[in-house]
Length: 123
Image (cartoon, rainbow, N blue to C red; front, top):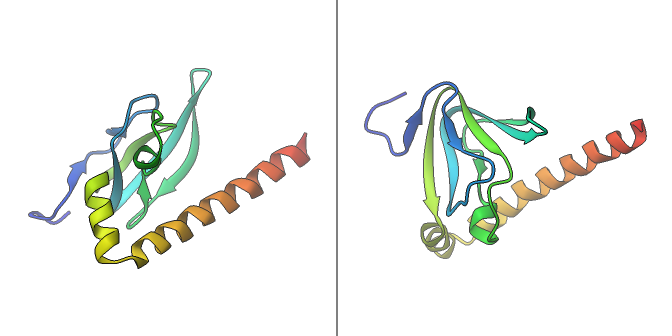
C-alpha cells in the first residue's frame, strides 16, 4: 500500500464495520479486499468479497437502521470513509455518480434475486 494516500488501512481480519452497530458513513475500497459476513445463530455466513472501487455501508446513509453485516479486511485493505454530506456534495458535482451507484446496487439486487431463486428451488 502506498503511503500518503487517502483512506485508512485495515490489517487482515480487522473489522471495518460490525453487524448491529449504528452507522453514519459508507466506505469505498481503494486497494485490497474485504469480506462481508452476516452473523446468523452464532455462525459467520460469508456473503461477498469486495475489491477495489467497491463500496459498502451505503444503507446507513439512506435509512436509520443498524449495520446488516460485518465487513472485515482480507489482507491489508485501504478504505475511504464517506459521510452523507460528502456524498451529497460529490453527487451535486457529478450527478452521474448517483447513476453509477444505482447501477451497482441494481446488480446486487439482481444477484440476490438469483440466489434466493436457487435457495427456493432447492427446498
